Length: 460
Image (cartoon, rainbow, N blue to C red; front, side, top):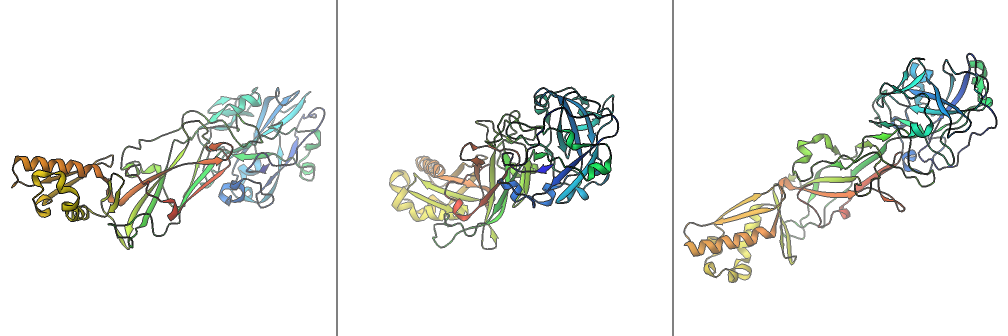
C-alpha cells in the first residue's frame, strides 16, 4: 500500500493478463506500506505529513472477482493481521512489508482478482463479519456481491482522527483508468515464507480527510490607528478560528472525479452554524480552534456552499486587552477606531462646534459639555450601536434636537465587544477549481498584519 497524497502521480501500475489463480486453502499475498519519506508526491499533505497522519493502526483487505474491474464483485474481506496484532507500532514504520493470509472462503476463481484496502476503519463503521465471517460490513450491513462503483457510493460518518490507535481513514486512491490493482498469480503464494520473499503488491491509498490549519503571524496591525493616533496600533492578544459550512461525512472512496484533476464530489449539504450570534465562539466552543490547530474534515465541493474559515481576533494595546471598541465612520470621510465610549464622546465634544452644531439649530448655542453630558452606549448583537444623549435641563425642542443628534451619531458607529473582530476566508483549492475542500489535501491559512485591512466585522 503506497501512502500517497496525490492520486495522479506516476506510480507503478499492477497489471496482468489472465485469471486470478487458484486459491484453495491457505494462500498469502505480500503487501508493502511505504511512508512519505521514501517518495513524496506533489500534494502538500504528503510533503508536510506528520507521523500521526501517516500512522496505520488497522486495515481490511477486500478481494473482488470478475472479468474486469467494473464488473468484479466483492467476495471476501480479511483484517490485516500484523496491524491488528501490533496496533500503532510497526504500522508507523516508514517502510513496512506485510505478509497477509487471504480470507477463508477465497476459492478457485475463473476470472480476475482485484484488491481494495481500507485502513484505519475504527471510526467508519467498516468491520469484518457476516454469515461467512469474512464479509465486509458497514454499520452491520454486508457489502458482499457489490461492485467497486457501489462501494464507491458508500458513505462514512467520520474521516478519522490522529488520536492514538484511531488514525485517518484511508482507501484506494483512484488512478488513471482504474481504482483497484489486479492481483495476478505473481502475487499469490501457498506459504507465508514464500510470500515474504516474493513480489510485493503496491496499492495506492489516500486519506479521506482534508487538513485545515490557521496560524497567526501578525505583528502590529498598521491598518488600525487607535483613537486616531497614527503612532498607536493594536496587536492580537488571541486568535481563534472556526469552520463554517464543512462536511464530516464522506464517500468511502473518492467519487465523481478523475485522477488528473484532483477534484471530487462531496456528500450532502455541509454543516453551518448561526453566524449572526456574536458569541458563537464562546457558546459553541466546539466550533472554535486555536492558533496552529490541525482540523480534519471531509471534502466539500458543493457550489455555493463552499467551506469558510472564520477568524476571530481579540485586540490589545501593549499588555492591556481592549474592551468594547467603536469604529466611527462618517460617510466614509472620517474613519476612526476608538478604544472606548469615552474616546468617542471626547471626539464628538471636540468636533461639536465645527461639525455638528449648525445642523441642530435648537441646541447650537449649547456647549459641548451640555450636549454630551449624559451619554449611554448599547452595542447590539449585530454590531450596531445606539448612542443616547440626555439632558433633563433641556426643553422639549432642545431634547428633540438632542435625540436627532443621537440618531445621527449612532449611524456612524459600529461596536466591537471586548475588542473582538472577525474575518471570513473561503478555502481556495486551486486555480482550476477555485474554492473547495478535497480529501488528501492540506489547506494552510496564515494570518499576517498585511491580511488585516479595514474590512473587519463585529460579528462572525
